[in-house]
Image 1 (cartoon, helix red, strand yellow):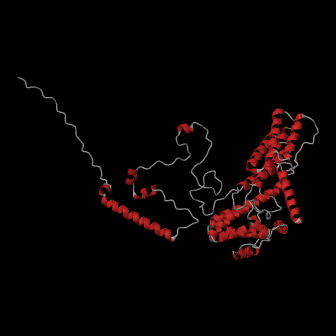
Image 2 (cartoon, rainbow, N blue to C red):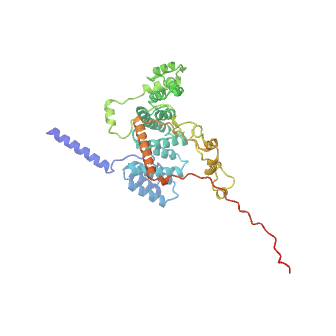
Image 3 (cartoon, rainbow, N blue to C red):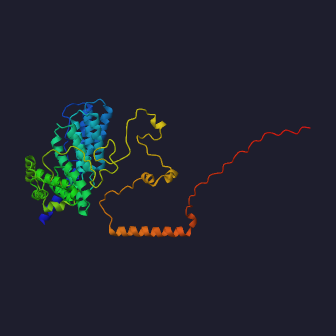
Amino acid sequence: MIYSRILHNLIAVAALAGLLSSCGLRRHKYADPITKNTEQPDKVLFDRAINDIEHSRYEIARLTLQTMINTYDSSEFLAKAKLAIADSWFREGGAHGLAQAEAEYKDFELFYPNMEEAAEAQERVCDIHYKQMDKADRDPLHAVRAEDECRQLLLQYPNSKFAPETQQKLRDVQEVLAAHEYAAASFYHHKGSMPAAANRLTGMVDQYPLFSMSDEALWMLGDSYDRMGDRFEDKAAGAYSRIVKDYPLSPHADAATKKLVAMKRPVPQADPVAYARMKYELDNRNAPGRVTRVLDIFKRNPDTRLAAKGGSPTMTVLHPGIPVSVPQGAGGVAPGAAPGGVASDVTATVGGDTKELDSRPDARANPPAPATNTAATAAASPAEAAATVPAVQQPFATNHPVSEKDKKLAMKKASDKAKKDKKAAGKNPQAQPAAATPPTQAPVVQPPAQTPPQTPPQD
C-alpha cells in the first residue's frame, strides 16, 4: 500500500514536470546572447526576446524582434536580431519551422557575409537537412541537400570553428548516399542487368572511396565485368587491382589476387596510406548489435556508425556516367562534346550577326539535305538508287534480350497482318496502282505553205 502511494506520487511529479516544460517554464539557454550591459531600448527589447526564446515562447519573441528591427533600423543589434529570428524558427522545429529557418539563415548570409555568425548560419542550414535525412533505401532528397550545404560551408569558411564537425557530417551524409547507390547496383546485379550494375558501381566507388563497403562494391563490379564477356577483362582486372591496392585488409583481397593471377595480370602492392587508414577505421568501428538493429527498423534517421572517421570527404558532385552497353560510335560524337558524350546533330555557336535568324529560316551549320526527286530516282540505275537509300539503323544493345516466347508472338502477329493485307487486296482490286505507261510524243503540226497571190485575167 505504501509503495503504491509512493509510485503514484512519483508519476504525478513526473507528469507535472513534463507539463511545466511543455508550457515554456523550462529554460534552454541561448547560444549567442549579447553580453553588453546597457539600458538602451533596443537592447532591452532584444534581451526580452532572447528570454522568450529560452522559454520556448517563439511567436512572442519574433514579434518583439520584428518590433525592434522596424523601430530601430540603425541599431547595432540589428544583425543579432535577424539571426535570433532564424534561431527561433530552428528551435521551434517541424517542417514549416525548419523551412522558415533555412530562408532566414540564407537571408542573413546574404546581408552579412563578412560576420563571424555567417558560418554559424550556414552550419545551421547544413544541420537542418542533416536532421531530416532518411535511410538509404528511401528518398535521398535531404541527403543530397545536406551534402551540398555542408560542402558549401567547408569551401566558403574553411577556417571556421564549425569546419571539423561539418566535415564529419559530410562523411556521414556520403555514407548514406553511397549506400543508396550500392542498393540500386545490387538490385541490378541480382536481376542480371550487368551493364546497369557496372555503371552504378563505377560511379559510386569513384565518388565515395571512404564508403564502408567500397571493397564489396569493387568485388561486385569485377564480377559484373567478368559476366559481360572477354572484351571487358581489362575493366574487371582494374576493379580487382583496386581491391588489392586500396583495400588490403578487405576479406576479398586474397580472392582478388587469385583473380589477377588467373588473368595473368600484375598484382599491385598494397598502399601504406590506405593500409593505415583502413586499419584505423576497423579498430574504431562500432558495429550495431542485434537489439540496435531491431530498434533501427522503427527509426527514420539512418545509422551512420559505420561511416569513416578520417580522411577527406569528396568535394565534387556525382555525375552519372554512360553505361558500357551504349555503343561508342553510334552516330559519332557531337562537336564540342565531352569524350564519351552522346551523339547529336545540334550544335551551339556564337554568331557574328544577330540578323541571321531573321534572314535564314534554318541557321544551322549543317542543314539537312533536301528531299530527292522520286522520278529521278526511278530513272536512275539500280546502283545509284541503292546508294541514295538511307542505311537502316541497327538496334542498340539492351539489358533485357527478347525471349523465345516474344519472338514467336511477334512472328505470329506479322503472319496475321500479312494474311489480312492479302485478303483486303483481293477484295478491292481497284486499289492496286496502275502500271506506269511511258508518255507518247505529241505529233508535230507543220504550218501551211504560203502561195503567192493570183492576179485577175486581163481582157
